[in-house]
Every structure is written in structure tokens, then in C-alpha cells.
Length: 296
Image (tube, rainbow, N blue to C red):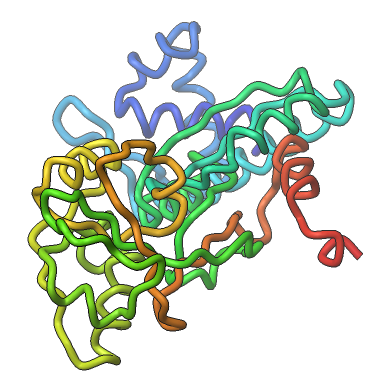
């Protein structure tokens, strides 16, 4: 049993037909059938069985398929790592950014680009929980997420912790807001949250309010930040947002006030999957943004 046979076998499983697999492999059908039979003979067990026009895995085939995927992934990762080492600083940085992404990220990426000009980028934006799933499935290598989330499977590099602000149009709140307000004051306003129920920011706001024994009057949840800011500007509602969103907003018809409460903060962090290969580009990025103390 060799790597070539395992690649043939996984493609047969994916295509569910010898003929379709042969076309995909750009080879004739008889040699591919012979390779499958040789694999079954060596292992002493049938790996596939015919079901109508398609092939289905036997229990033995399912076990081999699981191992084959892992072995092929390891082979691909080994090939990639060796190629990256051989080619110096080339590579792809595959990174996910939370919907409430850091306002400093463009400057960070620009600094990284200056140090590694041959690296290319695949950047995706999504909710933090979805980004975790994408890192687990290896679609992304790194992600900047908002906490709290369950992160047992990930290495975590804390980046910053932000305060929350109340944002409201003067149409909704005519009286001037103080630079800082107590958390209890937000109970007076219809609120828009930049996160959906059960996710980090939404959960943080609800828990902070619960400690002060009141339930916020949430009229909308909106993870599309440009739309959220438009809703705030129109007087639709006030928003409770991390400091990053305030920095992104430039309209003069909206007033902001920092919510002075130690329970209402928004930490964000860089994550990657534990005990899995990281590309050279990802490693360089982690090294660049890590605080000096964490590199010792």
C-alpha cells in the first residue's frame, strides 16, 4: 500500500464510480480497477461495494478512507512546508477577521507586507464562532475573534481589551451625553447590538446588565456594521459597541459615550489550531504581532 494507491482510493470514494474517478485522474479505467483490487487483496478485505450505479464504502473502506485523508493531509503539509522553506518568504496568509474587526488591522497587514513582500493574502470576515469553525476545518489558519468563546482546541494570543460605547443620534437622544455614562443608563434607550444571540458581544452585554439587575431593551441585532451605523444615524435605535466601531464611525450627527463598567469589556485575540502545521506566513504573522514578552 502506497500513497499513490491511497490517492486513487480517495478519489474513487469521492466520485463513487471507477469511470468518473479515472476521468478525473486522466487515466484509463482498467488500471484504476486493478489498483483498487490490489489494495483490497493486500488488506484482505473488500473496500467498496456496488449499490445501483454507484460504489459505496464497506465498514473496512470507511476505516481506510478516514486514515487515508489524514495521511494525505500530512503528506501535503509536509510538501508545503518543505517548499516554503526552500523558497524563503513566499506563501499565503489565510486569516479570518471578526465582523467587529480591529481598526488597526490594515496598518498591521501593511507592516507585514513590508517585511514579507512575496506573501499573498486570503482574508475572510465573519462572526467569531464561524471563524473558529473555519480554522478547525483548515479553511483558515489564523483568525482574529471576539471573546468569550470556548477555545480548548486553539492556541490563543490575546491582542487587546476594549471598552464599550453607547452610540446614538441626536434625533434619538437630543440631550448631550456625558463622556462617560454608567451602564444603568442604557436601560432608557432602544438598543441595537452588533452581534446575534448567543455570541460573544451579545452575551457580554446581557451578562453585564444582569449583574446590575436589569434587562436591556434590545430592538435589533445587526452584524453588518455599515448597516448598523446607518440605523444609528437614522435614529432607529442606539447601539452598544466596542471601541473599534466608534473609531470607524465618522458622522457628526452621532454622539458617543464610554460605558464605565468593569464587567462590560470586549477582549479580542488571535487564534490558531493546536498541534497542526502552520505555514511560514502564519508563523511570521504570529511572531510579528506577539508582545515581546511572549517571544521569550
